Image 1 (cartoon, rainbow, N blue to C red):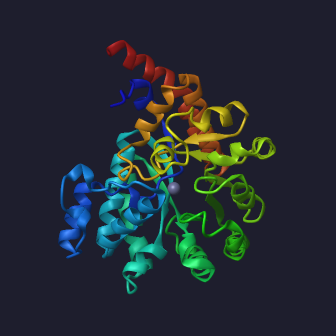
Image 2 (image 1 turned 90 degrees about the horizontal axis):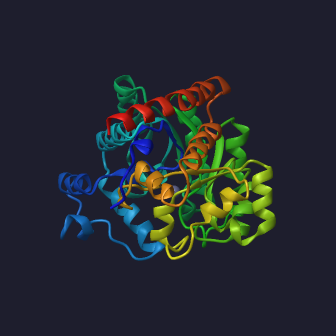
Length: 347
Ligand SMILES: [Zn+2]
């Protein structure tokens, strides 16, 4: 068990790579399965084995299994409330998190997505009133459903953005090896033409070319993971020069095999090469981690100065306007040493 220092706890953080459906606690998953009458072998046996998986493919199926138990807008509101309270308790000050509506409707075709996102928004706004934490949403297009479905989801994302529900962009998750980035040129072009942001998972289950394609073909402004960019030195230089952010989720990479635990995490080389990296938790409940635990893990490899750099990188990489970024930068600059000092004195 990693010790989470007061420095990490007090650090004001921005969260940019977290899937709402991947934050569902094992207890909640089991309660929802029972409540909604969903038969799942994962809802039986030891609680800590609920989300056990051995391969990346099995992980994707586990994620889908969680989505299968989410059936009503109130289920989504519940997990959004839990997410936001957990994030606020970790001193997350602002977040852009993923939702996967095409997975929701795969399991429940008649789910009213607009009503569901409105329920999520209400839960997040109530948390904002309690804690000050603001959470924006990114609609994942989910590679596995193919390009037509991705285009529908991109259109949906634009409608949700226009409806004032705090959707700021589209993402691209799912099976990267079998569904390459180039397939999704049109949905990403649609998102761009309609003024919402674009991010994509890449360089996780496929190599450096996948990262290059996400940036060059899809115009991705941030890359989820991107750890396999290291296979191509020219790409690493390009990412650094173009200030493309990599959202690095170390425990996720260890557990899915994107980056073996036995060797130094690619974050170290990418950061040293000047690539803008941020730290995140991906699917914290499924990976038995938290954002603070990920910062703590990274602090076992790098200095606190590096953690501050990653926290600042995350502010820079948000889709907030400059004046909002300035407030977060100020909080980071002013708040940390003072709070850290105070905590150190009392500990
Ligand atoms: Zn992810």
